[in-house]
Figure 1 (spheres, rainbow, N blue to C red):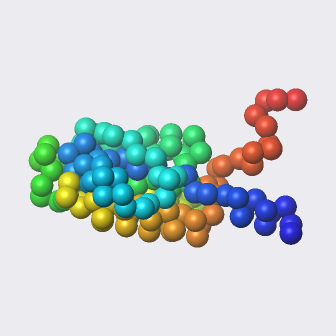
Figure 2 (cartoon, rainbow, N blue to C red):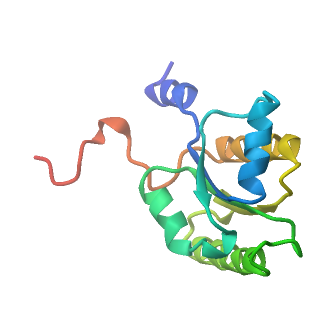
Figure 3 (spheres, rainbow, N blue to C red):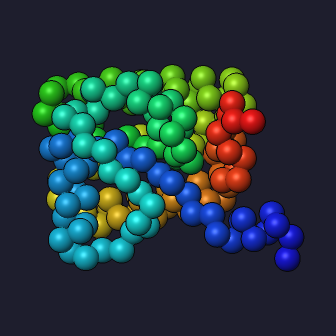
Amino acid sequence: MTPDAALKIEWEPKIIAFCCQYCAYSAADMAGSMRLQYPTDVEIVLIPCTGRFDVILALKAFENGADGVYVAGCLEGNCHFLDGNIRARKRVGMLKGELAAIGFGPERVEMYNLSASQGPKFAEIAREFTERIAGLGPSPIKRPADAGNPGES
């Protein structure tokens, strides 16, 4: 087995999910309460509203080792802050365009809408997105574990 093959077998994608507190986070909580299975590598970050999502949050997540990022908010037309999820969708679209322009891979970012009662859908989204990222492989900006820190001699 080649060293690259061994690395590929051990690698699990790291996913960051920015979830609004009213719907997506509640759906994630419901998925947990229902004991639905979804990948443990999905790290949920609670935000008050997806309208508070900013491109810099996703870029920081990638910088800190994320392989994929998704934003999950209320159903369109049902945002608790009126149009936060619409603004978030536009930001995610802009981010996808910027990532495509630099060759990073726009499919590493996605926006989802769901209600608080959709725990099974949250688990399904987490599984499908993780599978998508697993198919893409590690983030292109991720350093190998043995590369050390830059600046070390």
